Structures are given as structure tokens and as C-alpha cells.
Image (tube, rainbow, N blue to C red; front, side, top):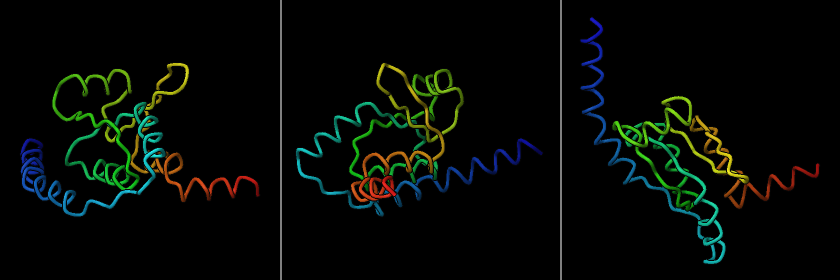
Length: 141
């Protein structure tokens, strides 16, 4: 019975994957417009970030859409096929779960942030000009 269930879900995934990927392309959000100097500063900061993802994972799509909306140039690392990115996620990150944001912090330390909601919250708090201003206003309260 278990192999039959597994086969069923593989078939569903095989049928839905192209629709999910096309839907992501068609409904791509418009990115934030920054002045060139500010965008260059943001691009420099995003060099320390990498998103481990599966192309058709709904939670990964959600994280990628937030990156597009915030105009972030974060390296995407497909961890679905067996290979370097999958192995790195498993051994260094500690578990094979996507999406996962790899954050290189000062001093050479690395933090692995799982869960799409936590990733989006991190990106918005760091790169969304509207939210960053609101966070600064509430800090003094």
C-alpha cells in the first residue's frame, strides 16, 4: 500500500510542477525601485546570503517571491537533485529541509534559517525600507 501512495503523490507532483513554475513566472511581483547606489549597497549585502530551495516547493516559491518583491539578488541553490548543494544543506545545515537561507555573519560564522515565514521576516526586517523605518520608530517607544 505504501508504494502505491508514494507513486500517487509522485504523479500528482509531476502533473502540478509545470503549472506551479509557470504560475510563479506569470505572477512575479514588481520589485522595489531603489536608487543605483542603494541597490549596489543591498547587492553587496546579499552576497553573504544563499537560498537552498526546490524549484516547485510552494514554500520555496513564497520565499523567492519575497526576494523578487524586495529586489534582492540572492544566490539560489537547488537542493533537490543529489549533489553538492543537497549534501551541504544536509551536513552543514543539519537537516534536509527547504527553503533554507544560509547567512554568512561577521567573524566567519554561518547561520542556517529554516521556514519560509522566518526567512521572509528576516529579509523584510533587513531590506524592506518601509518595514525598516517602522521598526526604528517602534524601537524608541
